[in-house]
Image (cartoon, rainbow, N blue to C red; front, side, top):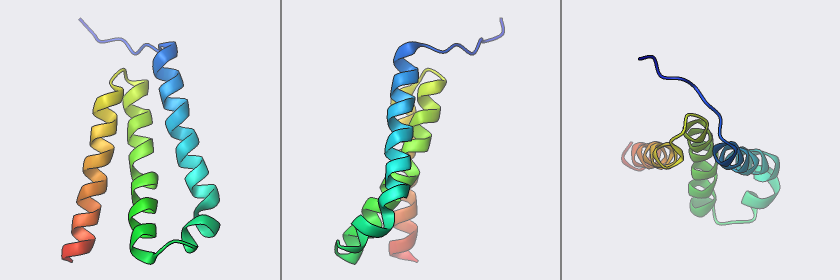
Length: 85
């Protein structure tokens, strides 16, 4: 049996929320994050740019929690590469 791709209203709303977070992060990245300390600004910016697209993609395929976990895992991997490299 071939799996079908279906949209649900709940998952569409979750994906819309995560895409709004992503777009707001890109729109305010110059103004807001420049006033913060450089270490906290980099961590916040990386986590808000990497995690929301993965969470939105996971929500569109019916697994919003798995998408969010993948986004957070990739954020952690990027931060560890930067810290150890």
